Amino acid sequence: MNKNEINVALNFLKSEAERGNAIFQCSLGVFYLKGEVVRQDYNEAFRWFKAAAEQGLPEAQNFLGLCYSHGLGVIQNYNEAYYWYLISYRNGDKNAKHGVKRIKNILTDQQKQEVQDRVNEWFKTHPKE
Image (cartoon, rainbow, N blue to C red):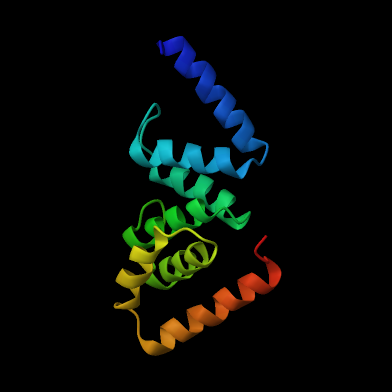
């Protein structure tokens, strides 16, 4: 692809992401996370992952867990990382299992229970399809 074709594709991706398409939001987040085609920007990556994650896209939920666990575009927060990793895993993203296991060992039993309660609430308002 030449530079013009890349810009056309990127503009299409951004347009669809802005229209609320979760898959395009997650894809755009990956570009910003990795600095591919666009300047690396963790804040933008986080923003797009969050938009897609809240719509229920498991891959975006896993990436949101990654952002929280490493402080990428957001203040590091292991409770939030665990929350999004668990949601992602329960939604079928097997890649989230590694994040769940890693963060599980950092949190206290009480923290894990509090997060689990929040995850259960999520699934009451966001049933799996």
